[in-house]
Image (cartoon, rainbow, N blue to C red; front, side, top):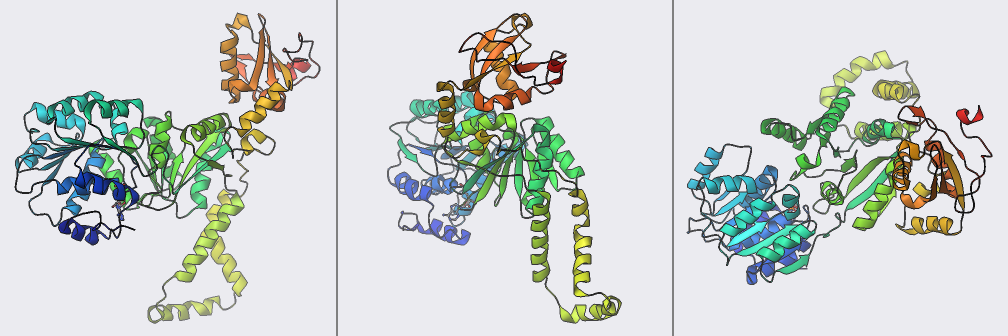
Length: 567
Ligand code: AMP
């Protein structure tokens, strides 16, 4: 196993790394540091946050800086203010014993005058968000003519956030013979374009997990009715007193609402999203970092660049819109060799989205149940007992107090005492969970959700059903007069049932009704979804349509499924 010394890192930085307690390089560092120190060439590295990538480019970058030259020699571009500050902090640690190296962060949302003053005092390394850097260039507050190293950190995030033009503009202004190092968690076509356009014979390294989320992360999902997502979330939090998590929602409003609900229900929670001022955001983050908050509720954009150690859970209250976002979200846990859980709480209709993530990211998602009331109380009780056993007791200080109460308690037996302690400590929780129902959707009867193990296997099984002709026909009182064609009908069915198009067979449209072939194994489930459904205020009727359309024309219904049909 290599040491930092054997990678060629110089003595002053070795001392700084020892101060930080870095004993050996991480795999990313092992691969990139010797390459970036020796060749000085370009690099495209697929690496996630949490793998030690900041030091992987930071150490060689600092080694290339001439401390006695005052000009800007290295430029690091990062998507967010938080990431800029984090990189600056880390670089200053690595450079602690390198005299004369100044590292200056510049980012939006803070006084540009202060930053200009900072740069004027001398900066060999500038760590910048692209937008603010352009502002500074336009004000001629910054000269990039002596830049020898450019790092694009979290390049995919920068492009996702719309910084493409800014990056083009900046890269056109730095000397052409610079070295360029690009780090990205994913490698989409936009990232490739940047690499092709601005880099020369770049070495490519797939380190630290590349396109998939980190090694130490367990990907889990639970399935509930959509309306039960909130109580389910609370149960997961209640069941794990050590949970320290980030919960993701899609919109600013949902993020705010969820945090407010949690706070009202007694949880230490707050939200970060784009509508907060920088000050408000900093305040929330400081509380979270100090663990005065147990749960941070965030939008994807607001969570970018957040670097908080030991996040135990990333919870997807809403699944992300983009596959890449799942990788970024879950990368907030399981960092620096630790383990973490990335849990998706999904409604029945979204199971296929988990399949999609499995297939696209080559990940395995384990199904977990929402903890039941007894389990939650038991876990909390065990946690309490552990705390009770470990409570530090100072006999000298407590002795007299014990004497004072033992007389009062002498008639209570041991069992009595234990019962009362539990009643006091868990009375509220017991009351809250007294009539708590099971929130889990019964997967046993819906085997399509209970068998997530091998992505694709389930599909083949379904395809088997279709191929073997095991279809049943469903009647529905919607037809061409309602504006449906086959495509719209299929989309409508998928929307109502949460199934995919492949689960449906032929569709026969009439003017006021239709017949649809459905995979026989899913027929009852599909019909169940229409139990109380309306279409534009009209109650829908579904029924068995007789023999499947694909076999021969339908005949009248045999068995009624809902009240309207019975009448
Ligand atoms: P990064 O991927 O750069 O965000 O780093 C993730 C975390 O790992 C940070 O807290 C670093 O301080 C820490 N770290 C980076 N390299 C090492 C190392 N070689 N040994 C121990 N910790 C490290």
